[in-house]
Length: 445
Image (cartoon, rainbow, N blue to C red; front, side, top):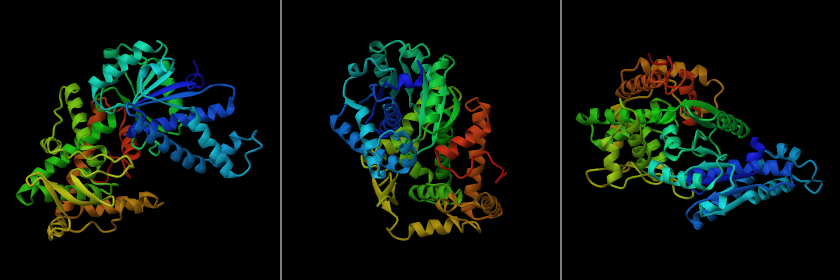
């Protein structure tokens, strides 16, 4: 069965969630394009979630994002609709494509609705017992020719395959948040993954214009394999700073170092909030379970979750308070575990004292956003990091330690067989985490 044939009947499980909604949008757009070319065929995308209210929100999201996508791709759509003489103006084409995308979606709340699905995308909570249960129920209803694509960010694919008995009909397609924007997809095959599944995943990713990077079937894969260990390094540095700073001050310091000195889009603790503090804890637990020589646990993360400091996003995509407090989408404070409340940046002059403790940023430094589209960034970055290397400021020393550990992690992922080569690690971190450079580099030796 070709990909075009399989895209006639598809299901997305967890469709109204943070990741599921983006996957639903991407798949629906590909199905709508096929329907434009094949108007006599029926295309059904069963968007399943347990909440009808959440599915209403999904439809609103799909309508909004499909319209945006049509606005950007109007030239391509005009070619698709070339036989439609009634579509003259750009807004006619944009409205029609949005309608065509919405037309393929069937919101459902029960599994039997999509028993005839040729492809099933799973994007539910990162809990293996729940994934086992849901996938097993689907497998017992659907054809033995149905292919499965899981968005798991940490659970080994062979574990899901063996537990449910899918016979190699499953592959990892780990989209990054938000799937509609992020270019990266980690593609994870187990030893038993059938060639048809891998070929289908690769072709679909290419149609979606995603950068497909292979990762081997080891818990956490490349992205979280690096990210979780990055977290542990930052937490370790927080503890090492406790002779000079309080825990709140040390968290602020490492967040600033990992964002400003390393020129990343956000600091490490802000990134934990973005992913979700509890989600990070779950990923660490999974990795510890399946990687025998690694103990990935953070007492700090565990305490935050215990205090219900879990981050994540609101339904409108805005950031929830987590380790950091946010005002108008910007960090405004740090959670104090001892007091059970946030210490705001505006409370006294503690923030300024930590900034002074860290010292000056290196000469030539610029914000991540400024360098992102700077055509000369590849010339500027070596100069900035040479100046960082030569600085003896405390912030620079912490940054150099971070550079060294991040590089070690990247190299270890290749040595341990998680990644096939160093460039795969760098590509995941640059495309999935929006870093300006890969962790394995020669900026700081």
